[in-house]
Length: 332
Ligand code: AHG
Ligand code: MN
Ligand code: MN
Ligand code: MN
Image (cartoon, rainbow, N blue to C red):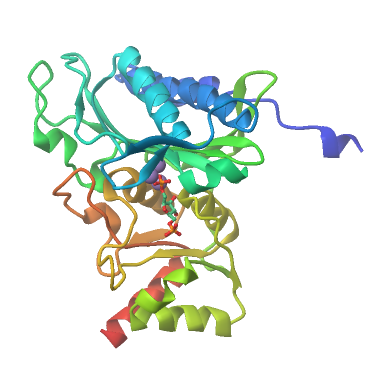
């Protein structure tokens, strides 16, 4: 039937960004251009990923990153693609990346934006053809343009983000972003080379039936988290865990659910990184009506003290996060 095959080739990402910019007559268009730069790099990375089994881009790169993880070739490739796009674009003065020990100071005296990025999220899924992603946060620098960048330009609270988004390289490639006025999702049409608006104004279900946690961590989990997981099972929730934060988050935001990466007895701050994983998704979650905490506080209120700092992350449907929160208070 025609309806099954007809798809919404209507609003391109480009046109959408332009139409939104028109709402801000004094805006210079630099943020719009920056989003387009990211979309272009995403298309290139999407192409590299889709050929991963055919060309020599899978497997280990032979180097350990600042996280102590073995870098995969695609971690390195994606990092190069995104940092190059952000450098050439001219809107950015500094980049924080999972794959770089230090801030990349672009020495660009005109750039007023700072970008934090996880170029390739879900590295362990590259070689097995499972969904992976990219996560980004955009901040406005706080020191005046034309001067060297300072620590305060980079270590900003999540609530200072002016935009954030992710790319999901899944059964199709999607780009989802917010500038603080709702969350919009675009699906990539490969043969046309365009992202099309497919998910306007995404709202997360208030409650959900999915819980997402690496249950292999059980021996190291604290009682409150164990109890919450038991509670999810009791009420008949389903377990879903991909191991790519972007994919796990995206599913739960659309379907309703909770993602937990708690601190453990081995790693008290858990695994997820604040600057280029938690903050972006927390901004998007809140814009979609969901919530994100570290178990005590709102993720977006955390004051960062270092580039690669980790944080426990609980993110998802409002009711589930609230339930977890009150259970944590009772037990602690
Ligand atoms: P990255 O591949 O960018 O280093 O991120 C990996 C993160 C995140 O994507 C995922 O949710 C989590 O690590 C998985 O951790 P476990 O292997 O402990 O489940
Ligand atoms: Mn990594
Ligand atoms: Mn990641
Ligand atoms: Mn990564």
